[in-house]
Amino acid sequence: MDCIINVEKEVDNVIGKFSSVQDKTDQILMDLITNLQKLQRDLIFLSTSNQCELSGIQTVIINQNIAKIRDTISQVAMNHREIHGAVSKVGKVLDKNFISNYSHLTSDTFKQEGLNPYLLNQAIIEHFLRQGMLEIGEELMREAKISVPEEKKNPFSELNDILAGLKKHNVKPALEWIKANKEKLGDRHTQLEFKLHRLQFIEYLRQGVHKQKEMIEYARQNFQSFADDHEKEMQSLMGSLVFLKSGIAQSPYSHLLDPINWNEICDIFTRDACSLLGMSVESPLSVTFNAGTIALPALLNLRQVMLQSSVPSVWTTKDELPIPIDLGKNSQYHSIFACPILRQQSNDSNPPMKLICGHVISKDALNKLTIGNKLKCPYCPVEQNPTDARQIQF
Ligand SMILES: [Zn+2]
Image 1 (cartoon, protein in one colour):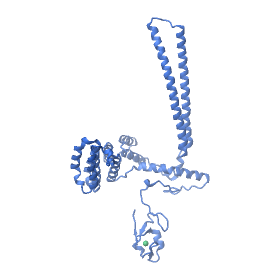
Image 2: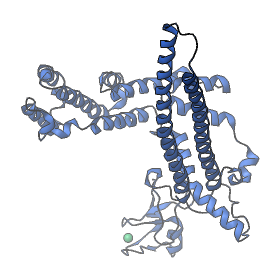
Image 3: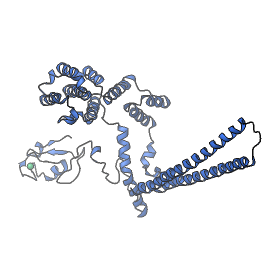
Image 4: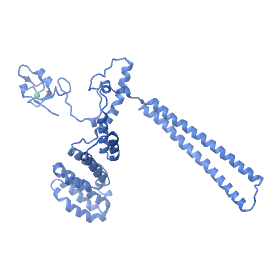
């Protein structure tokens, strides 16, 4: 954080200099232009009045003006140099406050195995396709000589078209997509479909009283099949019609116009479409990149400590970081079970086991607590046969 504040201070300094120099220069140049325009008028007057030679005073005025132009140029150049100095200082502060070489952070095993450029390029291409940057994705495919089959590319472009439509408050492409994928979507399709119809209705609502006819017609055509499951929401939509003339924005239904509704539908649609296509909602590349960015400061600190206290390298375990790093709730993809007895996280060889009383302990704890073929639950304490315990899958 301190690094950012240090750099910000310098950037503010540059911005301040820029605006003060700009104000000054603007004023000087304006004065100069006015002077020159006056001189030009005088000269034109001279040439039209058949007076071929300049008078002594006129020569002096012209010479004065030339000198003034020279002065102004050197003054502007000096101001410019001042800005240049401030800008280059920002660069120096950046270098001083941020580390630019991270090569020491890669582990040796990673170096030995080498980075698989094919897989990396594939991940980058998939990321671009997901983000709707099809042209960049295709260019990279050409340059990296990777071919992605059409059937893998098409769903991405279709999804992006639909999302672009939703962002422009157009629900039609999304509704068509739902129709085409009705069977695969199963129960989810009704939820999504109702939400889209609701938004179309709200869109008419937003456009005002002249859309009243369309609105009622739309509700009649599309809402009937949702009457049982979405009764309350539909009542609220119909209730809003009372305020159509006086303005929804000032009515108790103003929340219907909240733009968040459209952001929400984009999220819901992306989630459903991704799960239908068997993809994760977020791009794996952005998830990896974000996780790396969050973890980096902790790893840099660790390296500093290791260098100072000459601790032998602790970065030896193959698939593990030397310290636990908390990436925040958004990066938790799996539930974690920690055994309340042994205080260890469960893993494949030591999975969580549910006892018949409902309490859950790890397999290692279960083996340790078993005496003969009897186990006493450490919590309730029901006596039971350890073979009755069932493994729990997260
Ligand atoms: Zn128990």
